[in-house]
Length: 130
Image 1 (tube, helix red, strand yellow):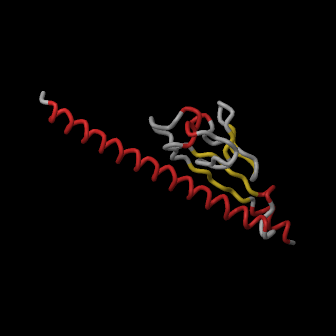
Image 2 (cartoon, rainbow, N blue to C red):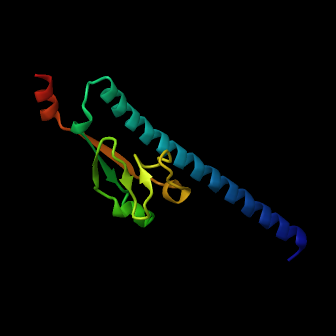
Image 3 (cartoon, rainbow, N blue to C red):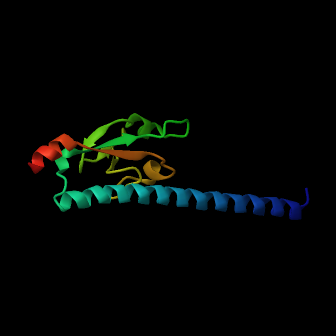
C-alpha cells in the first residue's frame, strides 16, 4: 500500500474517532443536564416548602441492556430518600445519573443512559397540609 493511501485511511479513521468522541460527550452532557434539571426541580419545591424531603423518594433506573455498565445495573431499582446519594459497588456517590458533584469519576458517568425516577408520597403530603 502506498504511503499516501495509508495516510488517507488513517485520516478518515481519525475523523470518525473525533466525531464519535464528540457524540459521546454531547450525549453524556445532555443526559446529565436533564437529570440535574429534574433533581433541581424537586430541590426547589422542597426549598419552597411545597414538599418535604421525607416524602420524596428517588429510584435508580438502569437502561438494562448489554451496554449498561455493571455498577449501574447493580443499582437498578435502588430507592433513596431525597438528598441521599446512590453508591455504586466501587464506592462512587451520585445524587442522580451523570452527577459528578460528589466526586464520581469518568468511569461512572461517560455514556451513562440511566435515569432517576421520583416518587412523591402524596398521601403524606395531603396529611401534612391539613
